[in-house]
Each structure stands twice: as structure tokens, then as C-alpha cells.
Amino acid sequence: MKVNNRHYRAIWMEGSTVCMIEQNKLPFEFEIHYCKTTDETCHAIKTMITRGAGSIGAAGGYAMLQTIYSCSENNLIPELEKAKAKTDATRPTAVNLSYATKRVLDAAKISKEFAISEAFAVADECVEHSRLIGEYGNTLIEDGFGIETHCNAGWLALVDYGSALAPVYTAHDCGKKIFVYVDETRPRSQGARLTAWELNQHGVPHAIIPDNAGAHYMAAGHINIVITGADRIAANGDTANKIGTLEKAIAAKYYGIPFYIAAPTSTIDINTASGKSIPIEERSADEVLYYSGKLKNGKIEEMRIASPGSGALNPAFDVTPASLISGIITEKGIIKADKESIKKLFDNDI
Ligand code: MRU
Image (cartoon, rainbow, N blue to C red; front, side, top):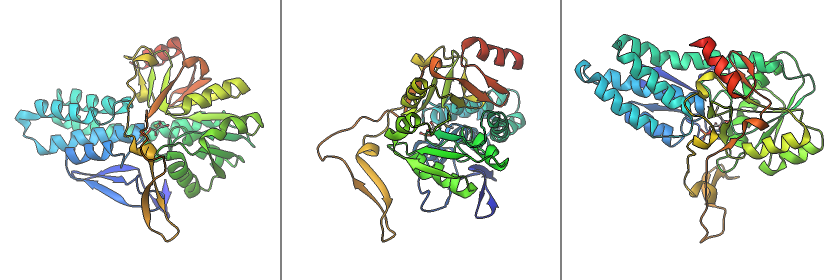
């Protein structure tokens, strides 16, 4: 993705430093955040300086790489096991994180060089898979389509291109006239802050809509397709994604609108039988009770927006049952969200 005419990935390595776009400061400030150690990279994942399933997978691989660079060869495996446990604990729902750390650890058991190349491969594959998701997803989008998306499953979330937004970019680049309805995605507003910023950078026509406006636009016939990303897809197709996704899927089903999940196969967890076993991250109540934004005088401030004295609940994800999902757009093609299709996808591969 280009920002001010320069191509950036959302996260990359320079020597032993992990560099990432500071997503908490967007859209008001564009800043690069630097992590010199595994601990600093873990902190950046936890505090969502980098976020989105693919980008945190890349961050996980790079965190392991930092451990490889900093420990002696004799201690490599025990140190990597510790680093994996620490990294995986930062964010429990997105499976890309443990997918990446496992790949690096397993490779280290063969050789240090293989482990290093695997850490880079995780990020590079994420980019290529996102590009292919764009190609496949584009076949679902017709000229004139209204597309609703939730959260940010774009370039920032997947190292480059994106999952849900990759088909949007491809369709736009092919000259299709599309309009994107961007759910604001409370409480952290990844839609209003990040997706809207990305679409602006790419020149894609869009509007931010309140989270509770999706059904209204579906009922009025403005939405032709809903595409969201995923943080973990269970073996039966049940899908965990940003809180609020489930409501969109229910509304889309009611109005007969196709609801697609876009995700690389690294987001499919064949070891999790169904959505019931996906761990759901609970985040701080403060994310609901406080809001930060730019004041008219240019200052960025955080303020309480809820009744003083009230607490809040803040589940970061929900699970959409496979029965509500029209299909999963992967780098290998578009498949049905069911056990047989997912098994076939992996059987052909492994
Ligand atoms: O909590 P976040 O912002 O890291 O949430 C993850 C997401 O960005 C979304 O759920 C997204 O739709 C899937 S990740 C590509």
C-alpha cells in the first residue's frame, strides 16, 4: 500500500528491529514504531500498535526471530519455547499468531537458518495470499456493487493488500464502480479510523456508517455483498471475527445478501472443531467507556463518554456460525464454509 506515494508494508524487519506502522495513532498521525526485542514486540501486539490477524502473525514470527538473534545456539530451543509462550499469550483469538510462532519453533528444531527463513516466509506468504484473495474475491463483485465491511481487514491487518479489503482494491483497480459501507466498529473504531483511512489512501469511494446502521442499508437495497475478515476459522467453518460481525451476518441472511469471509488458510484452525472452542479475548472496559480523538484545536485527547460509575463488558470478537456464511475466500479459491470443504482444502495441501 502506498502512503504519500511511498510503498509500505504494515510491518517489516530492519536488522534485528521490528518496524511497524503505529496503528493506534492513525488516522491522525502516521508514525513508525520500532521494537528492538521480543518483549517490545510482544508489548506492541498486546497494545495493538500492530493488529489484525495477518500482521500479528508476522509480528509473532519476527518476535521469534529476535529471540533467535539474541540467544546462544545452545539455548535456542528452550529460549524459543519461552518466546512462543509469551508471544502467543499476547492475543488469544487470532490463530495466525500461534501458527507463526509454531512454524518458527518447528523449523528451529531442524536448523537455525531454516527458522530464520520461516520467520520471513510467514510475512511474505501473508502478502502473496492476500493478493490472491483479492483476485478470487473480485469475481464476486459486480460493477455498481455496494459492499459492507466490518473492522479493518485491509493492508494494515494483513501486512499488505488485506483480506476483506483485497477484493475491494482489486475491483476498484479493474475500474468497477463500487461503494464501501464501512462499519465504524466500536469500541476501538478500526472501521472509522483504519479502514476509512486506507480506502482514502487508495481512492475508493466509501462512507463510514454507525455500527447499528448496517441492517438499515441492507433493507434499503444498498448492500449487495458483505465481506469481512476472520481471526480464526474453526474446522467446521464457524468464524471468529471482530465483535459485531455476527449481527451483520444475521441481518444479511434475513435480507438474502451474500455474506463472505475473506482469510488466508493460515487463519483456519483445523485443530479447533467448532466456534464453541475458540477463545474470545476480553479487553479492558476503558475501551468502551473512553474515546480518544482529535479536537478541533488539533490536540489528540481521551475522554470519558459513558455514565460515570458504570462499568462495561468488552468482548473483542464474536463467532459467526458457518450456516450464515456464503463462502470463504482464500488464496486457493472460494470454498464453502463447511467441514468437508475445509478438510479438502487441507488434504490437497498437506
Ligand atoms: O482486534 P483487532 O483489531 O486485531 O481485530 C482483528 C481484526 O482486525 C478483525 O477482526 C479483522 O476483521 C480480521 S483480521 C484480518
